[in-house]
Image (cartoon, rainbow, N blue to C red):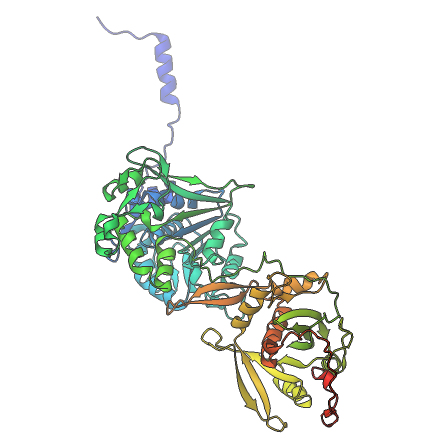
Length: 625
Protein backbone atom coordinates (compact mmCIF):
# COMPACT_ATOMS: atom_id res chain seq x y z
CA UNK A 1 0.00 0.00 0.00
CA UNK A 2 1.55 3.31 -1.05
CA UNK A 3 2.76 5.59 1.74
CA UNK A 4 0.74 8.78 2.08
CA UNK A 5 1.69 12.06 3.71
CA UNK A 6 -0.74 14.47 5.30
CA UNK A 7 -0.92 18.16 4.25
CA UNK A 8 0.27 19.24 7.70
CA UNK A 9 3.33 17.04 7.55
CA UNK A 10 4.20 18.30 4.07
CA UNK A 11 3.83 21.89 5.21
CA UNK A 12 6.18 21.41 8.17
CA UNK A 13 8.75 19.73 5.96
CA UNK A 14 8.55 22.60 3.48
CA UNK A 15 9.06 25.10 6.29
CA UNK A 16 12.17 23.27 7.52
CA UNK A 17 13.65 23.21 4.04
CA UNK A 18 13.20 26.95 3.64
CA UNK A 19 14.77 27.94 7.08
CA UNK A 20 18.36 29.25 7.13
CA UNK A 21 21.04 26.77 8.16
CA UNK A 22 22.55 27.23 11.69
CA UNK A 23 26.15 28.42 11.71
CA UNK A 24 28.57 26.41 13.87
CA UNK A 25 32.05 27.44 15.04
CA UNK A 26 34.89 25.35 13.69
CA UNK A 27 36.16 22.76 16.16
CA UNK A 28 39.35 23.79 18.02
CA UNK A 29 41.88 21.12 18.85
CA UNK A 30 43.37 22.27 22.23
CA UNK A 31 46.77 21.07 23.34
CA UNK A 32 46.93 19.45 26.76
CA UNK A 33 49.30 22.17 28.01
CA UNK A 34 46.72 24.80 27.05
CA UNK A 35 43.96 22.95 28.84
CA UNK A 36 46.17 22.59 31.94
CA UNK A 37 46.58 26.35 32.02
CA UNK A 38 42.86 26.76 32.75
CA UNK A 39 42.82 24.02 35.38
CA UNK A 40 42.64 25.48 38.91
CA UNK A 41 45.59 24.45 41.10
CA UNK A 42 45.05 21.62 43.52
CA UNK A 43 44.83 22.68 47.13
CA UNK A 44 47.46 21.04 49.31
CA UNK A 45 48.58 21.35 52.88
CA UNK A 46 52.34 21.47 53.29
CA UNK A 47 52.48 17.85 54.47
CA UNK A 48 50.38 16.72 51.46
CA UNK A 49 52.57 18.73 49.10
CA UNK A 50 55.71 17.18 50.59
CA UNK A 51 54.29 13.64 50.36
CA UNK A 52 53.43 14.23 46.69
CA UNK A 53 56.48 16.11 45.44
CA UNK A 54 59.38 16.23 47.90
CA UNK A 55 62.38 13.98 47.30
CA UNK A 56 65.13 13.77 49.91
CA UNK A 57 68.65 13.95 48.51
CA UNK A 58 71.58 11.71 49.36
CA UNK A 59 72.75 13.94 52.21
CA UNK A 60 69.60 13.03 54.16
CA UNK A 61 69.49 10.17 56.65
CA UNK A 62 66.85 8.39 54.54
CA UNK A 63 67.10 9.48 50.85
CA UNK A 64 64.06 9.06 48.63
CA UNK A 65 60.42 10.09 48.67
CA UNK A 66 59.39 12.21 51.64
CA UNK A 67 56.99 10.45 54.02
CA UNK A 68 55.33 12.54 56.70
CA UNK A 69 54.26 9.41 58.59
CA UNK A 70 57.96 8.77 59.31
CA UNK A 71 57.94 11.89 61.51
CA UNK A 72 54.26 12.32 62.40
CA UNK A 73 54.98 15.12 64.87
CA UNK A 74 55.97 17.38 61.94
CA UNK A 75 52.54 17.21 60.26
CA UNK A 76 50.69 19.80 62.35
CA UNK A 77 53.51 22.39 62.51
CA UNK A 78 53.96 22.17 58.72
CA UNK A 79 50.23 22.41 58.00
CA UNK A 80 49.90 25.52 60.18
CA UNK A 81 51.78 27.27 57.37
CA UNK A 82 48.59 27.17 55.29
CA UNK A 83 46.33 28.28 58.17
CA UNK A 84 45.23 31.83 57.25
CA UNK A 85 44.84 32.78 60.93
CA UNK A 86 48.44 31.95 61.90
CA UNK A 87 51.09 34.61 61.33
CA UNK A 88 54.10 33.15 63.19
CA UNK A 89 55.24 29.55 63.76
CA UNK A 90 58.01 28.75 66.26
CA UNK A 91 59.79 25.39 66.36
CA UNK A 92 61.97 24.97 69.46
CA UNK A 93 63.26 21.48 68.66
CA UNK A 94 66.16 19.27 69.61
CA UNK A 95 68.74 17.94 67.16
CA UNK A 96 68.15 15.06 64.71
CA UNK A 97 64.41 15.49 64.75
CA UNK A 98 63.61 16.94 61.31
CA UNK A 99 63.05 20.62 62.05
CA UNK A 100 65.23 21.79 59.13
CA UNK A 101 63.45 19.48 56.68
CA UNK A 102 60.10 20.79 57.88
CA UNK A 103 61.31 24.32 57.19
CA UNK A 104 62.48 23.32 53.70
CA UNK A 105 59.07 21.77 53.01
CA UNK A 106 57.41 25.08 53.84
CA UNK A 107 59.84 26.93 51.55
CA UNK A 108 59.22 24.46 48.72
CA UNK A 109 55.47 24.81 49.14
CA UNK A 110 55.69 28.62 49.10
CA UNK A 111 57.72 28.67 45.87
CA UNK A 112 55.65 26.00 44.13
CA UNK A 113 52.10 26.87 45.17
CA UNK A 114 52.27 30.66 45.45
CA UNK A 115 53.89 33.59 43.72
CA UNK A 116 55.41 35.49 46.60
CA UNK A 117 58.94 36.49 47.67
CA UNK A 118 60.73 34.27 50.21
CA UNK A 119 63.64 35.07 52.54
CA UNK A 120 65.70 32.65 54.62
CA UNK A 121 67.93 34.14 57.36
CA UNK A 122 70.93 32.17 58.64
CA UNK A 123 73.34 33.15 61.44
CA UNK A 124 76.06 34.27 58.99
CA UNK A 125 76.60 34.82 55.27
CA UNK A 126 79.01 31.89 55.18
CA UNK A 127 76.37 29.51 56.53
CA UNK A 128 73.83 30.97 54.08
CA UNK A 129 76.12 30.20 51.12
CA UNK A 130 76.74 26.66 52.31
CA UNK A 131 73.03 26.04 52.91
CA UNK A 132 72.09 27.41 49.49
CA UNK A 133 74.57 25.15 47.73
CA UNK A 134 74.11 21.98 49.79
CA UNK A 135 70.55 22.07 51.11
CA UNK A 136 68.17 24.58 49.53
CA UNK A 137 69.01 24.34 45.82
CA UNK A 138 69.20 20.51 45.78
CA UNK A 139 65.77 20.43 47.47
CA UNK A 140 64.25 22.86 44.95
CA UNK A 141 65.71 21.01 41.98
CA UNK A 142 64.33 17.71 43.25
CA UNK A 143 60.77 19.03 42.74
CA UNK A 144 60.01 18.99 38.99
CA UNK A 145 57.50 21.86 38.99
CA UNK A 146 59.98 24.10 40.80
CA UNK A 147 63.00 22.91 38.84
CA UNK A 148 61.29 23.65 35.52
CA UNK A 149 60.95 27.31 36.52
CA UNK A 150 64.36 27.67 38.16
CA UNK A 151 66.67 30.19 36.51
CA UNK A 152 70.07 28.53 36.22
CA UNK A 153 71.71 31.96 36.05
CA UNK A 154 70.64 32.71 39.61
CA UNK A 155 73.23 33.91 42.09
CA UNK A 156 74.15 31.72 45.02
CA UNK A 157 72.18 33.83 47.50
CA UNK A 158 69.50 35.14 45.11
CA UNK A 159 67.41 32.44 43.46
CA UNK A 160 65.16 33.55 40.57
CA UNK A 161 62.31 31.67 38.91
CA UNK A 162 60.67 32.14 35.52
CA UNK A 163 57.20 32.45 37.05
CA UNK A 164 58.19 35.65 38.85
CA UNK A 165 59.09 34.09 42.21
CA UNK A 166 62.39 34.71 43.94
CA UNK A 167 64.13 33.65 47.13
CA UNK A 168 66.98 35.35 48.96
CA UNK A 169 69.27 33.78 51.54
CA UNK A 170 71.05 36.16 53.92
CA UNK A 171 73.19 36.16 57.03
CA UNK A 172 71.97 37.84 60.20
CA UNK A 173 75.31 39.68 60.22
CA UNK A 174 74.47 41.51 56.97
CA UNK A 175 72.16 44.49 57.72
CA UNK A 176 72.00 45.69 54.10
CA UNK A 177 70.63 42.33 52.92
CA UNK A 178 68.09 42.21 55.74
CA UNK A 179 66.61 45.60 54.97
CA UNK A 180 66.57 45.85 51.18
CA UNK A 181 63.51 43.81 50.12
CA UNK A 182 59.80 43.36 50.71
CA UNK A 183 59.10 39.77 51.84
CA UNK A 184 55.93 37.72 52.39
CA UNK A 185 57.41 34.45 53.65
CA UNK A 186 60.19 34.92 56.19
CA UNK A 187 62.19 32.01 57.63
CA UNK A 188 64.74 32.14 60.46
CA UNK A 189 67.14 29.22 61.01
CA UNK A 190 69.06 28.63 64.28
CA UNK A 191 68.14 32.06 65.63
CA UNK A 192 69.94 31.56 68.94
CA UNK A 193 73.22 31.81 67.04
CA UNK A 194 72.40 35.24 65.60
CA UNK A 195 74.51 38.25 66.58
CA UNK A 196 72.82 40.70 68.93
CA UNK A 197 73.07 43.48 66.34
CA UNK A 198 73.65 43.67 62.59
CA UNK A 199 76.56 46.06 62.41
CA UNK A 200 75.23 49.42 63.61
CA UNK A 201 71.64 48.40 62.88
CA UNK A 202 68.96 46.99 65.17
CA UNK A 203 68.34 43.41 66.25
CA UNK A 204 68.52 41.33 63.00
CA UNK A 205 65.24 39.56 63.76
CA UNK A 206 63.37 42.84 64.13
CA UNK A 207 65.17 44.22 61.10
CA UNK A 208 64.05 41.28 58.94
CA UNK A 209 60.48 41.35 60.26
CA UNK A 210 60.19 44.95 59.06
CA UNK A 211 60.33 43.55 55.51
CA UNK A 212 56.96 41.79 55.94
CA UNK A 213 54.92 44.87 56.92
CA UNK A 214 53.19 45.31 53.56
CA UNK A 215 51.77 41.76 53.50
CA UNK A 216 48.64 41.21 55.59
CA UNK A 217 48.92 37.44 55.03
CA UNK A 218 52.63 37.16 55.84
CA UNK A 219 54.15 34.05 57.42
CA UNK A 220 57.12 34.08 59.81
CA UNK A 221 58.78 30.79 60.76
CA UNK A 222 61.42 30.62 63.50
CA UNK A 223 63.46 27.44 64.01
CA UNK A 224 66.29 26.67 66.43
CA UNK A 225 67.59 24.65 69.31
CA UNK A 226 67.67 26.79 72.48
CA UNK A 227 70.72 28.05 74.37
CA UNK A 228 69.73 30.14 77.41
CA UNK A 229 66.39 31.39 78.73
CA UNK A 230 67.03 34.87 77.37
CA UNK A 231 67.83 33.45 73.93
CA UNK A 232 65.75 34.27 70.85
CA UNK A 233 64.03 30.90 70.37
CA UNK A 234 63.08 30.35 74.02
CA UNK A 235 61.65 33.85 74.25
CA UNK A 236 59.71 33.29 71.01
CA UNK A 237 58.43 29.94 72.35
CA UNK A 238 57.26 31.39 75.65
CA UNK A 239 55.74 34.55 74.15
CA UNK A 240 53.63 32.79 71.50
CA UNK A 241 49.86 33.06 71.91
CA UNK A 242 49.69 29.28 72.14
CA UNK A 243 52.38 26.79 73.20
CA UNK A 244 52.00 23.15 72.26
CA UNK A 245 53.67 19.88 73.31
CA UNK A 246 53.45 16.41 71.78
CA UNK A 247 51.59 13.79 73.84
CA UNK A 248 52.02 10.10 73.05
CA UNK A 249 50.06 7.14 74.52
CA UNK A 250 51.72 4.51 76.69
CA UNK A 251 51.61 1.12 74.89
CA UNK A 252 50.66 -0.53 78.20
CA UNK A 253 48.07 1.71 79.89
CA UNK A 254 47.19 4.03 76.98
CA UNK A 255 47.55 7.23 79.03
CA UNK A 256 49.02 10.10 77.00
CA UNK A 257 52.13 11.87 78.26
CA UNK A 258 55.07 13.92 77.06
CA UNK A 259 58.44 12.16 76.90
CA UNK A 260 60.74 13.39 79.68
CA UNK A 261 64.40 12.64 80.27
CA UNK A 262 63.87 11.78 83.95
CA UNK A 263 61.76 8.77 82.88
CA UNK A 264 64.64 7.16 80.98
CA UNK A 265 65.95 4.41 83.28
CA UNK A 266 68.67 1.75 83.30
CA UNK A 267 69.78 -0.98 85.74
CA UNK A 268 71.70 0.35 88.75
CA UNK A 269 74.55 -2.08 88.20
CA UNK A 270 75.41 -0.28 84.94
CA UNK A 271 75.74 3.19 86.46
CA UNK A 272 79.49 3.30 85.84
CA UNK A 273 79.40 1.81 82.35
CA UNK A 274 78.11 4.18 79.66
CA UNK A 275 78.16 1.51 76.94
CA UNK A 276 76.00 -0.85 79.01
CA UNK A 277 73.64 2.03 79.78
CA UNK A 278 73.21 2.60 76.04
CA UNK A 279 72.31 -1.08 75.53
CA UNK A 280 69.94 -1.48 78.48
CA UNK A 281 68.12 1.86 78.87
CA UNK A 282 64.34 2.02 78.56
CA UNK A 283 61.52 4.48 79.17
CA UNK A 284 59.31 4.11 82.24
CA UNK A 285 55.69 5.21 81.95
CA UNK A 286 55.04 7.86 84.57
CA UNK A 287 51.50 6.53 85.11
CA UNK A 288 51.68 2.74 85.17
CA UNK A 289 55.44 2.21 85.51
CA UNK A 290 55.51 -0.03 82.44
CA UNK A 291 58.76 -0.44 80.53
CA UNK A 292 58.60 1.21 77.11
CA UNK A 293 61.26 0.09 74.64
CA UNK A 294 62.45 1.52 71.34
CA UNK A 295 60.26 -0.91 69.38
CA UNK A 296 57.19 0.85 70.80
CA UNK A 297 58.23 4.36 69.80
CA UNK A 298 56.98 4.59 66.20
CA UNK A 299 53.52 3.36 67.08
CA UNK A 300 53.40 5.87 69.94
CA UNK A 301 54.44 8.69 67.59
CA UNK A 302 51.78 7.82 65.03
CA UNK A 303 49.07 8.03 67.68
CA UNK A 304 50.49 11.17 69.26
CA UNK A 305 48.77 14.57 69.29
CA UNK A 306 49.85 18.16 69.84
CA UNK A 307 48.11 19.73 72.82
CA UNK A 308 48.14 23.32 74.08
CA UNK A 309 49.79 23.83 77.48
CA UNK A 310 48.63 27.41 78.00
CA UNK A 311 45.35 29.26 77.63
CA UNK A 312 45.54 32.07 75.09
CA UNK A 313 43.99 35.36 76.15
CA UNK A 314 43.60 36.57 72.56
CA UNK A 315 43.33 35.33 68.99
CA UNK A 316 46.00 32.75 68.21
CA UNK A 317 48.20 34.52 65.68
CA UNK A 318 51.46 32.94 66.85
CA UNK A 319 51.91 29.30 67.78
CA UNK A 320 54.96 27.52 69.16
CA UNK A 321 55.99 23.87 69.33
CA UNK A 322 58.47 22.33 71.78
CA UNK A 323 60.00 18.90 71.12
CA UNK A 324 63.09 17.09 72.43
CA UNK A 325 65.28 14.59 70.60
CA UNK A 326 63.79 11.81 72.74
CA UNK A 327 60.97 11.74 70.15
CA UNK A 328 63.31 11.22 67.18
CA UNK A 329 62.79 7.95 65.27
CA UNK A 330 66.55 7.84 64.71
CA UNK A 331 67.48 8.22 68.40
CA UNK A 332 67.06 5.43 70.93
CA UNK A 333 66.39 5.83 74.64
CA UNK A 334 69.86 4.37 75.14
CA UNK A 335 71.40 7.03 72.90
CA UNK A 336 69.92 9.77 75.10
CA UNK A 337 71.12 8.10 78.31
CA UNK A 338 74.60 7.53 76.86
CA UNK A 339 74.90 11.15 75.73
CA UNK A 340 73.98 12.36 79.20
CA UNK A 341 76.37 9.98 80.94
CA UNK A 342 79.34 10.97 78.76
CA UNK A 343 78.66 14.72 78.79
CA UNK A 344 77.72 15.50 82.38
CA UNK A 345 81.34 15.81 83.48
CA UNK A 346 82.05 19.09 81.65
CA UNK A 347 79.82 22.20 81.53
CA UNK A 348 80.21 22.72 77.77
CA UNK A 349 79.22 19.13 76.95
CA UNK A 350 76.38 19.12 79.44
CA UNK A 351 75.10 22.42 78.02
CA UNK A 352 75.08 20.86 74.54
CA UNK A 353 73.07 17.91 75.88
CA UNK A 354 70.54 20.18 77.57
CA UNK A 355 70.22 22.43 74.50
CA UNK A 356 70.52 20.08 71.52
CA UNK A 357 69.05 16.87 72.95
CA UNK A 358 66.47 18.01 75.51
CA UNK A 359 65.65 21.30 73.70
CA UNK A 360 65.79 23.09 77.04
CA UNK A 361 67.63 26.33 77.90
CA UNK A 362 70.78 26.06 79.97
CA UNK A 363 70.08 27.07 83.54
CA UNK A 364 73.09 27.38 85.80
CA UNK A 365 73.42 28.25 89.44
CA UNK A 366 76.05 30.75 88.30
CA UNK A 367 73.49 32.87 86.49
CA UNK A 368 71.88 35.67 88.45
CA UNK A 369 68.78 37.79 87.94
CA UNK A 370 68.67 41.22 89.55
CA UNK A 371 65.00 41.93 88.82
CA UNK A 372 63.57 40.59 92.08
CA UNK A 373 66.40 41.61 94.39
CA UNK A 374 65.45 43.65 97.44
CA UNK A 375 68.41 45.88 98.24
CA UNK A 376 69.24 46.60 101.88
CA UNK A 377 67.96 50.02 102.91
CA UNK A 378 69.10 51.59 106.19
CA UNK A 379 67.44 54.15 108.47
CA UNK A 380 70.01 56.95 108.08
CA UNK A 381 69.12 59.92 105.84
CA UNK A 382 70.93 60.92 102.65
CA UNK A 383 73.92 63.22 102.94
CA UNK A 384 74.84 62.12 106.49
CA UNK A 385 77.77 59.84 107.36
CA UNK A 386 76.64 57.13 109.82
CA UNK A 387 78.42 56.59 113.14
CA UNK A 388 81.70 54.59 112.92
CA UNK A 389 81.90 55.16 109.12
CA UNK A 390 85.26 56.91 108.96
CA UNK A 391 86.28 56.60 105.30
CA UNK A 392 84.57 58.32 102.33
CA UNK A 393 85.06 57.04 98.78
CA UNK A 394 83.76 58.67 95.58
CA UNK A 395 83.40 57.15 92.12
CA UNK A 396 82.63 58.77 88.76
CA UNK A 397 81.25 57.42 85.47
CA UNK A 398 82.29 59.73 82.62
CA UNK A 399 79.83 60.49 79.80
CA UNK A 400 80.07 62.69 76.70
CA UNK A 401 78.78 65.89 78.28
CA UNK A 402 78.19 65.05 81.95
CA UNK A 403 79.24 62.80 84.83
CA UNK A 404 77.45 60.39 87.15
CA UNK A 405 78.93 60.20 90.64
CA UNK A 406 78.30 58.65 94.02
CA UNK A 407 79.84 58.89 97.48
CA UNK A 408 79.93 56.03 99.98
CA UNK A 409 81.10 55.84 103.59
CA UNK A 410 82.88 52.75 104.91
CA UNK A 411 82.92 51.39 108.45
CA UNK A 412 84.91 48.52 110.01
CA UNK A 413 83.78 45.15 108.67
CA UNK A 414 83.69 46.62 105.13
CA UNK A 415 80.22 48.02 105.75
CA UNK A 416 79.30 50.42 102.95
CA UNK A 417 76.75 53.25 103.16
CA UNK A 418 75.48 55.27 100.21
CA UNK A 419 75.75 58.93 101.21
CA UNK A 420 74.84 60.78 98.03
CA UNK A 421 74.78 60.48 94.25
CA UNK A 422 73.91 62.61 91.24
CA UNK A 423 75.05 64.18 87.98
CA UNK A 424 77.68 66.84 87.42
CA UNK A 425 78.04 68.95 84.29
CA UNK A 426 81.66 70.14 84.40
CA UNK A 427 85.06 69.28 85.86
CA UNK A 428 84.68 72.26 88.18
CA UNK A 429 81.51 70.70 89.56
CA UNK A 430 83.39 67.46 90.15
CA UNK A 431 86.18 69.31 91.91
CA UNK A 432 83.70 70.89 94.30
CA UNK A 433 82.10 67.49 95.06
CA UNK A 434 85.29 65.46 95.42
CA UNK A 435 87.87 67.91 96.77
CA UNK A 436 86.03 70.66 98.65
CA UNK A 437 82.68 69.32 99.83
CA UNK A 438 82.28 68.19 103.46
CA UNK A 439 79.64 65.73 104.65
CA UNK A 440 78.09 65.98 108.16
CA UNK A 441 78.60 62.94 110.35
CA UNK A 442 76.58 61.36 113.14
CA UNK A 443 79.92 61.13 114.93
CA UNK A 444 80.02 64.90 115.01
CA UNK A 445 83.00 65.86 112.87
CA UNK A 446 82.32 66.49 109.14
CA UNK A 447 84.23 64.33 106.69
CA UNK A 448 85.73 64.72 103.24
CA UNK A 449 86.41 62.24 100.49
CA UNK A 450 89.66 60.32 100.94
CA UNK A 451 89.81 58.55 97.52
CA UNK A 452 87.94 58.99 94.24
CA UNK A 453 88.04 56.63 91.27
CA UNK A 454 87.28 58.21 87.89
CA UNK A 455 86.42 56.16 84.79
CA UNK A 456 89.07 56.79 82.14
CA UNK A 457 87.60 54.62 79.39
CA UNK A 458 86.09 57.76 77.84
CA UNK A 459 87.55 61.29 77.52
CA UNK A 460 90.77 59.68 78.71
CA UNK A 461 93.13 62.66 78.46
CA UNK A 462 90.72 64.89 80.38
CA UNK A 463 90.48 62.27 83.14
CA UNK A 464 94.28 61.97 83.38
CA UNK A 465 94.63 65.75 83.53
CA UNK A 466 92.07 66.06 86.33
CA UNK A 467 93.63 63.22 88.33
CA UNK A 468 97.06 64.82 87.89
CA UNK A 469 95.79 67.93 89.64
CA UNK A 470 94.71 65.94 92.71
CA UNK A 471 96.94 62.84 92.71
CA UNK A 472 96.56 62.16 96.43
CA UNK A 473 92.80 61.79 96.08
CA UNK A 474 91.93 60.91 92.47
CA UNK A 475 92.92 57.74 90.63
CA UNK A 476 92.02 56.85 87.02
CA UNK A 477 90.47 53.43 86.38
CA UNK A 478 88.66 51.52 83.67
CA UNK A 479 87.04 48.16 83.08
CA UNK A 480 89.11 45.42 81.46
CA UNK A 481 88.33 44.51 77.86
CA UNK A 482 89.09 40.85 78.63
CA UNK A 483 87.39 40.56 82.01
CA UNK A 484 86.14 37.05 81.12
CA UNK A 485 89.72 35.73 81.31
CA UNK A 486 91.02 38.16 83.94
CA UNK A 487 91.56 36.38 87.27
CA UNK A 488 92.66 39.22 89.58
CA UNK A 489 90.11 41.81 90.87
CA UNK A 490 92.28 44.54 89.35
CA UNK A 491 95.72 45.27 87.95
CA UNK A 492 97.82 48.45 88.15
CA UNK A 493 100.09 50.17 85.65
CA UNK A 494 102.02 53.45 85.91
CA UNK A 495 101.35 56.43 83.66
CA UNK A 496 103.64 59.42 83.15
CA UNK A 497 101.29 62.39 83.18
CA UNK A 498 103.23 65.23 84.75
CA UNK A 499 103.16 63.82 88.28
CA UNK A 500 106.25 62.79 90.21
CA UNK A 501 106.27 59.01 90.02
CA UNK A 502 103.46 59.05 87.43
CA UNK A 503 99.77 58.31 87.76
CA UNK A 504 98.68 54.77 88.54
CA UNK A 505 95.94 53.39 86.29
CA UNK A 506 93.79 50.62 87.74
CA UNK A 507 92.19 48.15 85.31
CA UNK A 508 89.19 46.43 86.91
CA UNK A 509 87.69 43.00 86.49
CA UNK A 510 84.17 44.45 86.38
CA UNK A 511 82.41 41.07 86.50
CA UNK A 512 84.25 40.29 89.74
CA UNK A 513 83.17 43.56 91.33
CA UNK A 514 79.57 43.20 90.16
CA UNK A 515 79.49 39.78 91.80
CA UNK A 516 80.96 41.45 94.89
CA UNK A 517 78.36 44.20 95.22
CA UNK A 518 75.28 42.11 94.41
CA UNK A 519 76.28 39.49 96.97
CA UNK A 520 76.41 42.20 99.65
CA UNK A 521 73.48 44.42 98.69
CA UNK A 522 70.96 41.86 99.97
CA UNK A 523 72.62 41.01 103.29
CA UNK A 524 70.93 41.76 106.64
CA UNK A 525 71.30 45.33 107.80
CA UNK A 526 73.64 44.61 110.74
CA UNK A 527 75.88 42.05 109.04
CA UNK A 528 79.52 42.77 108.16
CA UNK A 529 80.11 43.54 104.50
CA UNK A 530 76.56 44.75 103.81
CA UNK A 531 76.19 47.43 101.16
CA UNK A 532 73.45 49.86 102.28
CA UNK A 533 71.22 52.37 100.55
CA UNK A 534 70.08 55.38 102.57
CA UNK A 535 66.49 55.76 103.76
CA UNK A 536 63.93 56.39 101.00
CA UNK A 537 66.57 56.05 98.29
CA UNK A 538 64.99 56.98 94.91
CA UNK A 539 63.82 54.19 92.62
CA UNK A 540 66.19 55.60 89.99
CA UNK A 541 69.20 54.17 91.84
CA UNK A 542 67.71 50.66 92.03
CA UNK A 543 66.67 50.81 88.37
CA UNK A 544 70.28 51.48 87.35
CA UNK A 545 71.44 48.53 89.45
CA UNK A 546 68.88 46.23 87.80
CA UNK A 547 69.94 47.19 84.26
CA UNK A 548 72.14 44.09 83.91
CA UNK A 549 71.91 40.38 84.67
CA UNK A 550 74.48 37.63 84.88
CA UNK A 551 73.98 35.13 82.08
CA UNK A 552 75.79 32.14 80.63
CA UNK A 553 76.85 32.48 77.02
CA UNK A 554 78.21 29.93 74.59
CA UNK A 555 80.77 30.98 71.98
CA UNK A 556 79.32 29.96 68.63
CA UNK A 557 82.75 29.22 67.14
CA UNK A 558 84.53 27.49 70.01
CA UNK A 559 81.61 26.17 72.05
CA UNK A 560 83.19 27.59 75.23
CA UNK A 561 80.73 28.53 77.98
CA UNK A 562 81.31 31.75 79.92
CA UNK A 563 79.27 33.59 82.55
CA UNK A 564 79.07 37.35 82.00
CA UNK A 565 77.13 40.36 83.20
CA UNK A 566 75.08 41.61 80.24
CA UNK A 567 72.74 44.60 79.76
CA UNK A 568 69.06 43.74 79.54
CA UNK A 569 68.45 46.32 76.78
CA UNK A 570 70.42 47.58 73.81
CA UNK A 571 70.86 51.02 75.41
CA UNK A 572 71.01 50.35 79.15
CA UNK A 573 70.77 53.07 81.78
CA UNK A 574 73.42 51.54 84.03
CA UNK A 575 75.60 54.49 85.06
CA UNK A 576 74.97 54.12 88.78
CA UNK A 577 75.69 50.40 88.53
CA UNK A 578 79.09 51.44 87.18
CA UNK A 579 79.69 53.98 89.94
CA UNK A 580 78.73 51.43 92.59
CA UNK A 581 81.09 48.88 91.02
CA UNK A 582 83.96 51.38 90.81
CA UNK A 583 83.35 52.48 94.40
CA UNK A 584 83.76 48.97 95.78
CA UNK A 585 87.02 48.55 93.86
CA UNK A 586 88.44 51.92 94.98
CA UNK A 587 87.52 51.16 98.59
CA UNK A 588 89.49 47.93 98.37
CA UNK A 589 92.44 49.79 96.84
CA UNK A 590 92.22 52.30 99.74
CA UNK A 591 92.39 49.46 102.28
CA UNK A 592 88.93 49.58 103.88
CA UNK A 593 89.24 45.92 104.85
CA UNK A 594 91.88 46.96 107.38
CA UNK A 595 89.58 49.35 109.28
CA UNK A 596 89.26 48.22 112.89
CA UNK A 597 86.55 48.75 115.49
CA UNK A 598 87.82 51.26 118.11
CA UNK A 599 88.60 49.63 121.43
CA UNK A 600 86.24 50.67 124.24
CA UNK A 601 87.72 53.36 126.50
CA UNK A 602 88.49 52.18 130.03
CA UNK A 603 89.30 54.69 132.76
CA UNK A 604 92.47 53.86 134.67
CA UNK A 605 92.95 54.77 138.27
CA UNK A 606 96.63 55.45 137.64
CA UNK A 607 97.16 58.80 135.97
CA UNK A 608 99.99 58.80 133.43
CA UNK A 609 101.53 61.78 131.70
CA UNK A 610 102.91 61.80 128.20
CA UNK A 611 105.07 64.23 126.34
CA UNK A 612 103.30 65.71 123.30
CA UNK A 613 105.11 64.78 120.08
CA UNK A 614 102.20 65.48 117.73
CA UNK A 615 103.27 68.94 116.76
CA UNK A 616 105.76 67.62 114.21
CA UNK A 617 103.16 65.82 112.12
CA UNK A 618 100.14 68.05 112.56
CA UNK A 619 96.72 67.20 113.88
CA UNK A 620 96.38 63.39 113.92
CA UNK A 621 92.69 63.47 114.70
CA UNK A 622 91.74 63.89 111.05
CA UNK A 623 93.93 61.46 109.15
CA UNK A 624 90.93 60.27 107.11
CA UNK A 625 89.93 63.86 106.28
